Image (tube, rainbow, N blue to C red; front, top):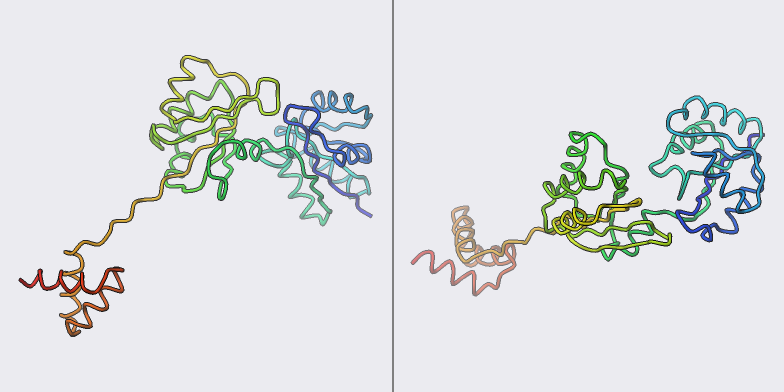
Length: 278
């Protein structure tokens, strides 16, 4: 009988954020697949857990993924962890989950820390609808193409960014979204020097030019503003009445239909039509 794959979220900074269930899952697993075994070993030592660790990261995921799959199919239970936060989100664990799903292996996700949701909740931006865009490319061309595809995105956008790439990203975002676009910088979340800066893209460039960025960032960018609807004018109403009359409608019926279409009072449409005739 096949085993199971557990996705176990780990603290994004404060070790006190590990849940009881996450700890119990790590203790019960036959082995743990870790993005960086050194980072995970520190957490396990803190928790007093001794467990077999298997390295699983971006550059060995194809080879190691097959080995992990074989062990699970043989009946072992694997707990998958990333260095911080929820595994399989902007993380090579995504591929292992797909492999398990295709093999009919049960995958169970333990709820827990996630930098994207933590940042969104304190960003001060709209949280009703949002999209997670992960890390932007190191390549300027690819980064600009990614941002250009989001030019008209109305939902709040969430990005992960490293300090050494931040200024390049801000310059490209400013060119695509405009200097006045609101953005929240959530830095070193749950750690001693946690900081939230709510500003605009233009002001952010000035700030981080004076204050070199440090630590890991979650960028929460406001979506594109809704385009202002142009209210119909008397000229629009008169033109529509005339067009409907040319189609054979009486003035009365043309005025009534125009008022409904343009959401205008009938007397205003009628007055506009007479003014147009005059």
